[in-house]
Amino acid sequence: MSEVPDSEIREGSRSNVRAMDDTPMPEPLRRAVHQLVAEAVQNCQEVLRSTEPDLAGDWQRMTLCRATDAADTLDMTSLLIAAYCQRTGMSQDTLSSYLQARQQRSRAAGPQDCDRQEVAGLLNGPAPDPDDREAWLRFSWGHGFADAAQTYEDSPQRLLTQACLHGLQARLCDDVEALDSYLPPRIAALARKIAQVLEEP
Image (cartoon, rainbow, N blue to C red):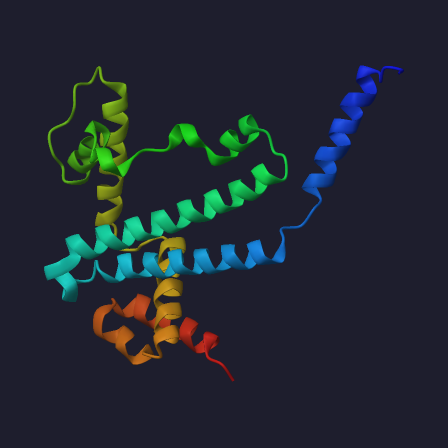
């Protein structure tokens, strides 16, 4: 039996990778991903909704529950896609790099020092030890958010994102009129326009 040259093996492997990369996502998987992303987006809207003053009595519970619901749904989406990639022959090293496993943090451990430093920066708390570079980075990050909160205008990207989420939810619930009751006037006006665009003919 004749041996196949290494160059041909490498070329064959590249061809297989190209063939796999050119394969579109299977329709059932695509539909599942769309459904999960839609659920995550709805949870994100509820996080924003729960920050409004009229829900001040329950914001801690609702923001945490809906934010973690959104995170769990997106985790489920990632792992569903990963399972398909694994089934079609993707190497574990490649899969791990795509899943960005090294940056994952467990909620079960609760807030860490870096989170507490960020909150300190947000609320103008005591600064950390200057020699602790990671603590200073997170403190500065929080301080940057606090500074941004003092400016009169939000960024157009942030305003449009909020308006899109609220307008979408209002259209899905067929309750566009309620937007004016809990949103700042500028965001409410944008959300109403988006809801009108989404209205079925």
